[in-house]
Image (cartoon, rainbow, N blue to C red; front, side, top):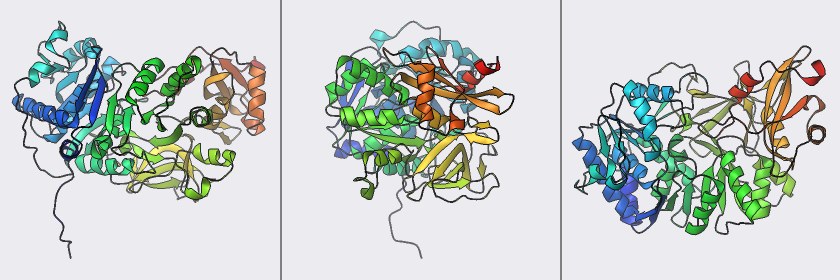
Length: 542
């Protein structure tokens, strides 16, 4: 027997319709590429998203067509999101930090008909477009006063494209499993892989991440996603903020510590999200200039492991709750967020921090399984480790254009992360499979070593890689950058680590470097580090 409920599909257009109807006066504030701060409301955004849908229709865009974007977080990018997905087309956000050859590959692979670009990235698309024969036009996201000369054959000015379009569009109703957006993995090895999200998955993911034990979003919040809209749809935050009617603040291209602090302070931001490298910059600026963020309540730290020292600094020095988060492009992307269970809140500080340093618990909708080397499920006891596998309604079942990648098997997606899950459901990433160091037949976690190293007062960032050893096969090499005004001492750092890890885990050497290679999503590129130090000989072997 079927239930007698109305059959109303879960569609992205319903988010902005709801916000315009019920949170019409709530603001979307953007720092623009041109410079000034732009303000308008959800009601205004809904009208312009409808103009965008009409403009795309005028360009001949049909349901299922792909529309690319190469843009910062801002109100025009937001309008393209909702106008494109709302009309039944697919919004394909692209990471501008990729190599131009990869950009051309993505545009061709996705078969984008048009691409919308911020002024910052016009030179990039001018370089790439000649290698994308199927690209019909480029829309430069600015007004006529700022429209630059361009070598592109078919360039449009964004505001002129919208000018004169009707502010009314009849959002179509279609199957909720229809594709809504397309994101590609960071492509650290081989070509990036496409993940094609559905309207249903996007709405369910939005519900889940808005929950109190996840991001805790509501119309009482002022939300600034530092994580870019081109990085897994800003972790889904613009969708969830729209669902809940939260005020949104878009940082545009200025992501340095001073600029972020100024915008957060001026707009009374209560919640933000970004990768550790961003928070290093913000905390560095605040510490050096005696600044605070009195309205900030929570920060989500994801993309790579959050150093325990960062979580402690935010809580103890600034009164800001840092919630560790974990996810993947293949998961829309949120797979876990860390909040304490009620019975843990009165634990001693060190015990609480031991829990908060983990990646967290999954929301309803995500299931996790630890698979051992023999292919069997491992117990959730916090000790047994293996590859983390996941499944759920917003986890991809295949890659776009690659139905048999090998990552999907028996209804589970293999993440490539080595992890544990404890009896309380807290998952902890031990390492990426390819980053684990095998020394004398035993595994060493590079993530744990990096986390401990970054708690040393002289160390700003740390990365651990394996280097060849004639006896032990591999040994850990620790690379660090110096904290402001500090000079890390090799022996002091090693002695510090020796008090925290097993003796055989202690790195054989420490190298102080000026900076680490950082990828498009803010992560340290260990592939480059391994290549750079592939022939490195440890001092005791020279």
